[in-house]
Image (tube, rainbow, N blue to C red):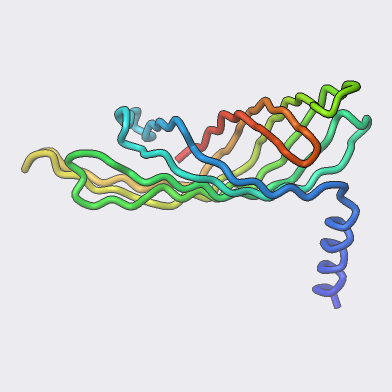
Length: 166
C-alpha cells in the first residue's frame, strides 16, 4: 500500500508540473582536474554529448520557476600514454531555478542555475615510462551549472557552463 501511495504521489506531482522538458546537447569545451591538483591537458577530454529531462512549475511569479532534473553526460578520453581508458559517464540529479525575462515578443531570454549531485563513473590507467605510471578513477560528487538562453515557442537555445567534481 505504501508503494502504491508513493507511486501515486510521484505521478500526481509530475502531472501537476506545467512543463516537462527533454533536451539533448553537445559538450563543446571540456577540461578537468584530479583531486591531487593534476590537470588534464588540452584535448585529453574529448567533446561528448548530453541528454536531460526536467520538469518545472511557476514559483511566486510567472517569471521565476523551480525545476527538478536528471541528465546523462558522456565524454571519451584521448591522451597519449594512456594504455587503458574508459570514458567519463555522469548522471547528475539536480534542482534548478530559472528566471525568464518576459516581454511582448515570442522570444524570451532567461538565466538558469543548477545545483545537485553527479553520479560519475570511468577510469584511466597510464604508463609514460617504466617509472612513471598511475591510475585514476572518476568519483561521484557535487554538480553545479549556470546558463543563459533564449526560448522561442517550443524551441530553446541554451549556453551552459556545468561543473562536476570527479
